[in-house]
Amino acid sequence: MSAHYDAIIIGTGPGGEGAAMKLTKSGKKVAIIEKSHSVGGGCTHWGTIPSKALRHSVSRLIEFNTNPLFGEDQATKHLTFSEILSHAQSVIRKQVNMRKGFYDRNDCDLYFGKASFKDSHTIEVRKNDGSFEYLSGDNIIIATGSRPYRPTDIDFNHAHVYDSDTILSLDYEPNSIIIYGAGVIGSEYASIFRGLDVKTDLINNRERLLSFLDAEMSDALSYHFRNSGIIIRHDEQYKSVETHDDGIVMTMQSGKRMKADCLLFANGRTGNTDKLKLDSVGLSPDGRGQLKVNESYQTEVKHIYAVGDVIGYPSLASAAYDQGRIAAQAIVEGKTKEKLVVDIPTGIYTIPEISSVGRTEQELTAQKVPYEVGRAQFKHLARSQILGSDVGSLKILFHRDSKEILGIHCFGERASEIIHIGQAIMEQKGKGNNIEYFVNTTFNYPTMAEAYRVAALNGLNRLF
Image (cartoon, rainbow, N blue to C red; front, side, top):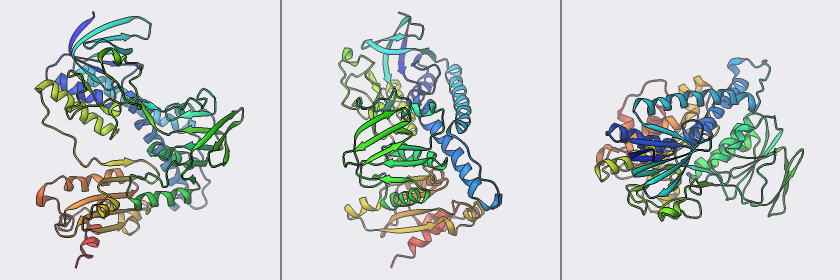
């Protein structure tokens, strides 16, 4: 036995980091285990950080090629996927160094290796050199994240077949790509590849894109995807994938056949629990590899907790960090005072971005809530005109009688930033949550935030 700890955390992604920082600052002796060669988890190395860095590079490339500020006679600039990866890698390095510093400064013992349960209080760490180490802990937090789902009938070892992790190893310039799965990840990568002038087919299992969104936002994204040249195919399921030296052929259950230089399979994720030997502690993940927890993030074994993607919804890096802190509070104080906010904002980094918080029009209609709508079109805002980015809108849903804000939906550049202004007002309880706040507040001019005042006036003018 190497050492005993107050808490052992498995995984250094946002959930593990949030738990570790809260525990160490509360005076607990903490060990954290990471299977990769450096800290940060899937969020930093394969998911959130690299995909958003890629998206930023592509959106700037599109701006350069389309903005008249740079001259209508300029030569179109072209970048490959490999070239824009360099920016993503530099961001990853900065993130890793920063996060490694968090553990060092807070005296958190960091172990690199693959973790599994020996018993309910003992973790076996298989190091990269093949040696083993055993750690014991009063409490254990599982923050192992998730990985892309891989159907067994698709050859992911083939040079032209990728998932959302391995796509970062793409080292050639495809002329065409099929993206199977039109969820958040698939839609974001469709934006990226189409922005690089790659012929893109986006296969959606459902009847519309991102069906959890307000329908108006989903429709806007569909329109701009099609306008950019993305081919969207709804209500499709694949039947088979043939791999060839020069690419892949996908046959759909509907009979359609499509050929492309490569395939990005981005349809679902699985919790990373299969290598933890959870059966040795009496825990059984569901079919998606996810664990059931209570409001304190305790599993069915009282001293074992789980946070982040490994417990499913909302599967957001931002929420995972807070979940880690709440689980740590339960360990330190024996109970939790904090909870995740009810209205967690969603940020989707397509081109253009989408962000929302609260209820959609469809939900309010089904619930028979008397609501009204206030809209602001970005093309009418001075700041948007200055930026040359006039695509997008802000929509505020509010109660006709109380004027309480019920939902906010934003489509356009910087939507994921703009949404937080409205979220802050929605979180004010009682009379503090009122659309008239935006009318009675003076905003900097010109700003994108001014969209709230425009939308509020638009909505209030509809009342009678």
